[in-house]
Image (cartoon, rainbow, N blue to C red):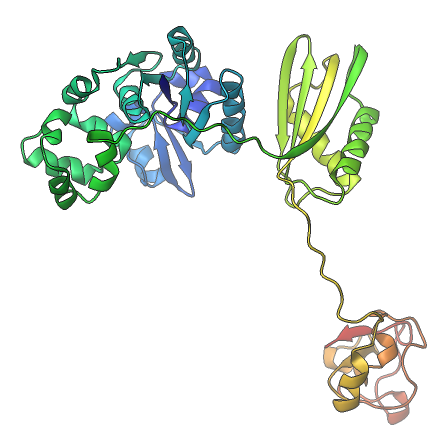
Length: 411
């Protein structure tokens, strides 16, 4: 049997799971200044997706407006791993929507009650999805084999919204006086394609062919290290250093895009993740990411029995090699042909009232290529002013405290 699991809207379900007190208020989730998800209660009060926050607040006085949870993607992956422990056949369709291959109906009921999810069970995946949309939170809708047509014919037409029917398409079907899915199934498929823009997406659900197979959940490539603590002890800097050093050795020559920490304390599992701004490769970077991920796990201060660290999103960084082996190797032909192509700006008087009178330009030497900020003596002696004022010998500005103590590179 195929079980369809719906936890929609996903950000609303996730926020309410983390804070059950939100269930007593109309809730909307915003991102980028607009509403992107909302609960059915808020929808009945007039809030819609895409609505600006000011309009949503004015529409519903007691509306709870919360930002999109940053941990939404990580929480969805964690939930898929929980489902994977029940069955390897787990296919993620979208955040909050998944298909499972189950042989036990009581297990489907446990999923519905434990996650407060809508679950549909049927021999076919398309029928199971429609059964899930027809169920309520915490309940299972079962469609037995051989009774799929009877089930579809009784469904209200608006339930097709969950499998691709747009609000405009629903209104067009209602203009024809249609109210049930069975009335739409009397149409020829070509008629439906010609009448509805989204008809192609609806055909497999209404007319088939239906499918039984559920894909396996792909296992993400990664490397990991672990440490067992006997007797149990709290996490400290030495533990994190030990794990970071071991993971850095196992990563080479690759880098990781995500770090996951799983800690076992008192028989309970605590999980935390960290998404660095750039791929992790060095031991110090891994150590800092490990500390951040462990801080998010909620296991700080607990006596730990075991800590596992796993790096995901492995990539092999590409290195850009230089065009020339030695500094200045490519500058010699350039300066020989264009002597004034590159210049150096030498500070003459840093306290000059007019900035343009506080420096002078000198030609760039090939020897200076490997030393952008050269010490004294890196410039060739001689007067070759190109910009600014001449030196003191020519009646220009006197040398300031920074004169002769280095040069600032200017293209």
